[in-house]
Length: 449
Image (cartoon, rainbow, N blue to C red; front, side):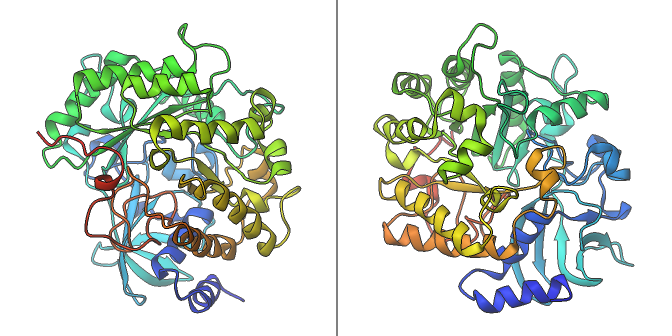
């Protein structure tokens, strides 16, 4: 079409039921954004909340390739508003790409804007440095390192195991850079704790709870790499679960507790529930059988696709279907060399998976694939999946939810364009806004006392 602007405007015209904000958001998530020096943060010494690299790099280059953005971090997220498209408030996770046609820069008056093909298309807001980031733990570690917050402060992201025991080409998921991200931060001399101590987590949460006077932080996620043997003498359910137990004992009802782990046997899932976890994310990654086997070789080897899906359904008996929310990585369906070659085929496959889970009352969610260059699929597909795939997925996702009478899943903040805070895909931006909070009809509402 000659320009990215023409492509985006064509898709907005062809898919008018998809919010225009979601079209831009998906394009930024799939292809990244460049930052002028005027738009970078001063790390933890400044007024802007910097990118924490909370689990994956979510960048289109390694740290040495990012230039000044590797020394002065970009903001964790940006908010888009206004401009010629009259965008409603849209929270977007930052994925740095120095070669992106999108650029964040300050104008002559110092006001940040998003530019596409040289034209200012939106005003840009950046997250203020939260007060709790200005305080350190007793051992000198930063709150940002131990318990960073994302989704504009809604979610505390606790990556308590920073590497994955699916290791090497024959086991690692082919789109995932968790192990590389660990290595690059250690090589750069940045603090990046491999296994986080429970007491450090509790101390960081005490600081957040003390200084988050608006109670903006509503949920926490416990996550990290897959555990195939043991970590610190614990299997996966006990390792992640014992953090939840400690948090719930110290801060009963303060936050909605979520855990991202493998699809585990029913007895293990019950342990999560017993430890106080409210929402379980046993991510299924990609629906197609052949692609799951090729792109998730470790998961196929240790569990297998059919057993993985059976365990997801079984976990609904423990948590209730509404509180089982498996993620998939939207876009890898079209990754060369093995992915679908047409958007029609990819959408048909993904929709089949959505219908499988939603017909059982389980509402998946998705993360927009960022083709990180140190991963096999990122190297082979630096442009990611076509933007049209992502826009049609939003349309198919909402239609499938409507077919089965489902609403937005709990633990993700408010749905609707202009209201959503979930930042790594646009699925919440694309669902209808509701007056009541999503927590009210899903997981238990956390205490505000």
